[in-house]
Amino acid sequence: MKYDVTIIGSGPGGYVAAIRCAQLGMKTAIIERYPTLGGTCLNVGCIPSKALLDSSEHFHLAKHSFDLHGINISGLKVDFTQMIKRKNDVVSQTCEGVKYLMKKNKIDVHHGHGSFINAKKIEISLPDGPKKTIESEKTIIATGSKPSSIPGVDIDKERIITSTEALTLNEIPKEMVVIGGGVIGLELGQVYARLGTKVRVVEYFDSILPTMDRSLGKELQRVLKKMGMEFFLSHKVKSATVEKKKVIIAAENKKGEGVTFEGDYCLVAVGRRPYTENLGLENIGIQTANGVVPVNSHLETSVPGIYAIGDVIRGAMLAHKAEEEGVFAAETMAGQKPHINYLAIPGVVYTWPEVAGVGHTEDALKADGRAYKVGSFPFKALGRARAANETDGFVKILADKQTDEILGVHMIGARIADLIAEAVVALEYRASAEDIARISHAHPTFTEAIKEACLAATENRPIHM
Ligand code: FAD
Ligand code: NAD
Image 1 (cartoon, rainbow, N blue to C red):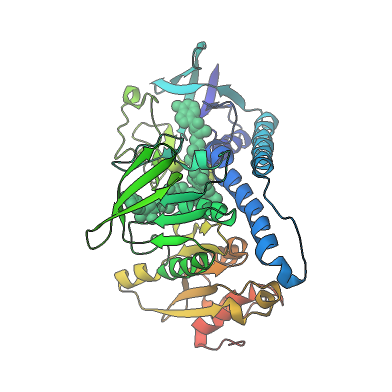
Image 2 (cartoon, rainbow, N blue to C red):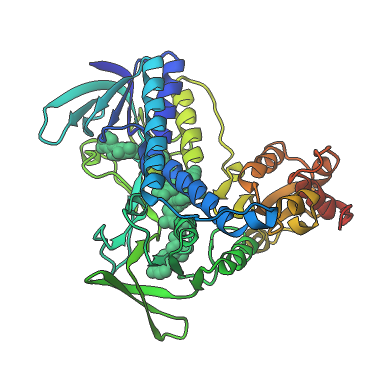
């Protein structure tokens, strides 16, 4: 078995890279250690979490908003087993889709753990199964990431759990303590809060979503508090211990005082670490730096012909970033000159209201000493938002003070995950705020908030405020 290129790992980085390599005429193989394709994203990440977010949102709306619209339901209850089953069905259909794409593109799929013997030979082994060796001219490492923890917190996967277990619980927790007010903590925290769990989020920084524009975390916290979630900011978790069916979490607040939290489950959501276990990197002379596989600007490692993409390298751990890098690596191998604008890769949080940002944050512009102007527009001033009873949130545009070029767009509100696409196009084409303000936006839509925020940034002349 000889290939032009082999990809180790079938997540969104790996399978997209495989398809692009095949499209470019390379004889391609993909290795996956799990029985299903799709990696973290399809199996235990993006897809199952969004399935549960959607299901729990339907329940929440039926319980709290339908009566406002004149729809009365009696006997409303959650069938959690069915909710999890639907999520599992969505996952398996999506994974099957990737399997189909591999077949369609004539990509050989090898199930088993891949490990470098040398730069051109990879051993594939199944637990208690036979081993085989394949040869490959070039390889893309796309082995992704795993959940990480903090000292004093040992994940037992029963009571002290990660996102993987939180997606397959067989009961709705009564009280859940979430360590980490980042993306996973808030998305999965909201799923359970909607289903009736008392959710307490304990966050080390002084705001939730600390890596996004600060205005977003502040607004999201306000909305999530209204639905009963509790937040303990500037709290450093020191330990978590299981006592029968309870977890006791010990933390320290910013005054250095000890604080304890209790729940029947503790979700650890403090980030993820690149995964390179038993990959045989030592056999090809690649040394990781803090677990990360180092690559140059062509995504090539220190070994010529071996590339790495996605969560296993530096940068945001996002499926669409991994996908862009998969295409980039494939096209680079084929002798093309692709390009990725990392600044224009959006970050989206799928809570409700949804949250998204692209480009520079306001803090980053301040730190750079860049002269900028701000234009904001609140959803409560939008006709469409009032019609939908979705008036929380805003759009905020950051533009260069002299040139009016859009430098960053940060939004929170209904349908933001889709709205951010316009901001990405604006950044990619280096639009000015006035460019966007002069484009017709359909009425009544949520997109009008972008136009209005751009008008506010350009000459402080929004129409509807
Ligand atoms: P992965 O998807 O992690 O895939 C790596 C694959 O490599 C795995 O299947 C693994 O089994 C395999 N592998 C590893 N080592 C070997 C080996 N030696 N041999 C064979 N196979 C191997 N991102 C978003 O953009 N949007 C979201 O909404 C989103 N939601 C998320 C929700 C959760 C709960 C989590 C945990 C993550 C979420 N992410 C989201 C992040 C996203 O899942 C990752 O950024 C993305 O999956 C990274 O893709 P990847 O291809 O680099 O690696
Ligand atoms: P994260 O980096 O988003 O958040 C981790 C949070 O934990 C941070 O806010 C951090 O300050 C906090 N923290 C760290 N140590 C702590 C301590 N001792 N006590 C209290 N708080 C502590 O990481 P995550 O939420 O675990 O997500 C992991 C990765 O998965 C992220 O990189 C994210 O991009 C990706 N992901 C993306 C999406 C999405 O795109 N919608 C969804 C889920 C996950």
